[in-house]
Length: 242
Image (cartoon, rainbow, N blue to C red; front, side, top):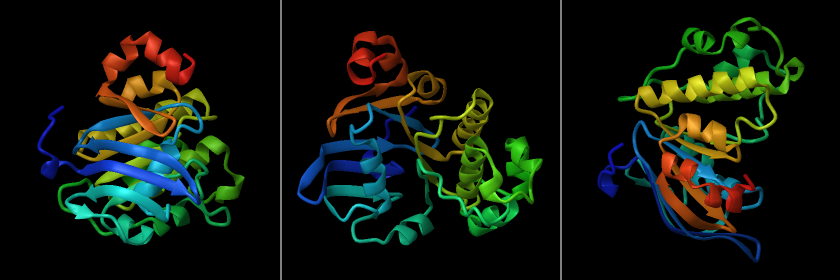
């Protein structure tokens, strides 16, 4: 994976601090994601991973530093504006519409095609997620947690994003669902979509990611090749309890 100049990077975060009220949660966090790169954001619960994703997508009011997506500074933009730029977010709590069917949920996420990224269609997503293809008219509230997770990812891809941020997608779902999510991430990568993946499962991260960024107590502890992190058992034990 190229480590091109910052100006060419899809996402560039520099010296980011973030607060919830008076409590500072992130301290001088810097990272980047390039086109077609999968970056795993690793750390324990409470390390600051979700806060970082929420800050980037515009859901944290108080923060300092810089976040630039596809050449566009994100400071001051509402979350829906950031999404319109082509930055997709899959939250940990999924947030599907329980009263809508699979097809209706996908329709909500539809966005016009974007230059340089794949145009996702319902048919293409059903081929990627056969479980969803088998239940196109099932309401979201009647789906299992894993099925809802697939639907959330598929709905995000309907927006034809340039970069997708996923918050703990493999947590609490069956192995078959984890495999489907890994295939989806592989498809994104193959078509030049950047992925920033918040994860506690080092095995899943190692299977899909090019690079690891480890956060401990709101600070970046490690930024390097995924294989280097996978080989460092002492670091894994420190930050993940592995």
